[in-house]
Image 1: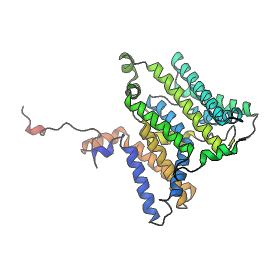
Image 2: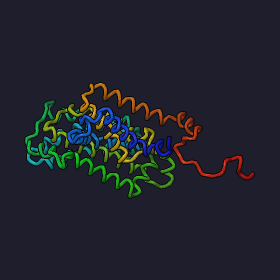
Image 3: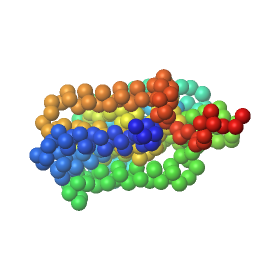
Image 4: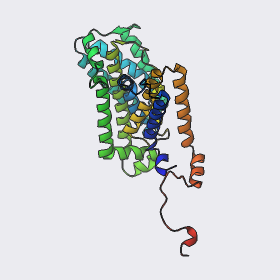
Length: 334
C-alpha cells in the first residue's frame, strides 16, 4: 500500500473512485449505472445537501460543530417561498440573509461568551425549528412560480442543472479562496492548535465568527434552492440533512478533532454518498443497502484514523508521512 493512498488528503478521492469502479463492476456492462440519467440524478442529489456539508465541514475543520444547519436549511426554504412570491431571486437572497445572520449570531455568542459550539447550535437548531413553524403557521407552502422551479431543474449539457451548477460554483469559489489565500492555512492552524494560533497573532474569534456565518449562508442557499426546485417547503420538510452532511464531511477528510479537510475533499465526500445512492437505485438494490454500505465505509475511515492503527501501520513501514531518506541506522557514522 502506498504512503500517498494512506494520506487523509488523498483518501476522499480514492474512496469515490473505488465506489464508482465497484458499482460499474456490479453493473457488469448492462448499462444501468454508467448512464447520463444516473449522472444527472447524482448531481441533483449533490445539489440537495452539498452546501450544508460544506458549511458544516468548515466549522468542523476549526474544531467546532454547527448543529443548527439541519433546521436553518428548512427555515431558509420557508423564508424563500414566503418572500419570493413575485421574485424568486429576492426570496433566495432573503433566505441567505436570514441564514448568514443566524450563523453570525451563533458565532458571536460562542466567541463573546467562550461557550461550546454544540450547546449553542443545539439551541439554534431548536430556535430555527420554532421560527419555521411560526412563519408558516404550521402549514406546507407551495411555490407560485412553477416556471422558475422547472428552470432550476432543467437539464443543462444533459447532466447538470442550474441548481447543481450554482452548487458547484460555490465549491469552486470556496476552494480557490481556501487555497489561494491565508484563510485556508489559518483554518487548519486554528483546528490543529487554537492556543498556539492565538499566540501567533491569528484572529481566531474572527475566523470562528466567519465560519458560522458562512455555514448559515450555505445551509440557507441550499435550502432555498431545493425548496424552489421541489416547489414546496414545510417546517420539518428538510430536517433530515444533518446526518448525511456530517457523514459526507467525514468521508471528505474532515477530522472531528479539527485541523484537516478541504472544500474539494468535502465535495468528494458528498459525491461518494450521492453516487452510491444513485448507483444502487439504478441497480435496483434495496434501500437498506445504501445505509449498510455507507456505515461500512464510515467505520473503515474511523478505523484508519485510529491512533493505535496508525502506530501499527508506521511499524510496518506504511507511515502516513514521508520518512526522511538516508542510510540505515546501522550504517550511519557514530
